Image (cartoon, rainbow, N blue to C red):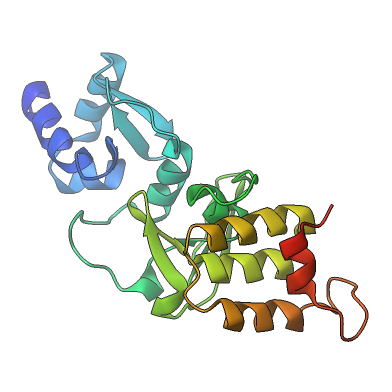
Amino acid sequence: MKSLEAIKTLNDVSAHQRGMFTSAQARRLGVERYTLARLEKGGSVERVARGVYRMGGAPGVRDGDVYAAWLSLVPDREPGVPRAIERTPVAMGATSAWLQELGEIGPEPLEFCCGERKQTQREGIAIHKRLLDDADVVYVAGMPATSPERTVLDLIDGDEDLSLVAGVLRDALARGLVADAEGLASEVDRRGGKAGLPHGASLYELLMKGRR
C-alpha cells in the first residue's frame, strides 16, 4: 500500500480512537509492517506504546497514556463494533477515578480488570480477572471504567489512602454521579473493620467529613 493511501486508511480508524491505532488494526486494514515503519520514520505516525501509534499532528489529550495502554490490551478491536463487556478490559481503582476526574488521585500504576484472563508484558499495568455487572461500568473518554460507586469500594478494598478515597467519594456525590447514595453508604460502612474502625463506627461518615 502506498504511503498516502495508508495514511488515509489509518486516519479513518484513528478518528474514532483519539487519534490512535494499533499495529494489529493497521495489519487488518492492509497496511504492511514496512509501510508502517516508513510512515513512522517520516513522522506521519509516532509510536506511543508497544503496538500503539498516534497519527502525526494529532493533538495530545489528558488521558492519552491511559487510552494507549487500554488499546494495547484490545489491539484487534473494531471501532464502532460492540464488544461484550466480559472480553473488554475496564479501567478500575485509581485509574478509573483519575479518568473521571474524581478526587486528587493519580492514575498509575494503570489498573484494569477483565472477565477473560489477559496478560501484558508492559510494566506499570496490572490486569485482574474479574467479571463486572453492566451497572458497574461507565464509559469515559471512549473506554470503559468502573462506576464511581464501584471505584470508591475498590479503592477501599485496595487499601488506598482514605484521605484520597474521601475526595473521590465527595466529588462523585457532588456531581450527582451516585444513583444510590444510601446503598453506597451501607457498602462503605461494611468495610469499616478493614479500615481499622471500631465496631459500630461509620466509615462513610468519616470519609464524608474528610479523612486527614
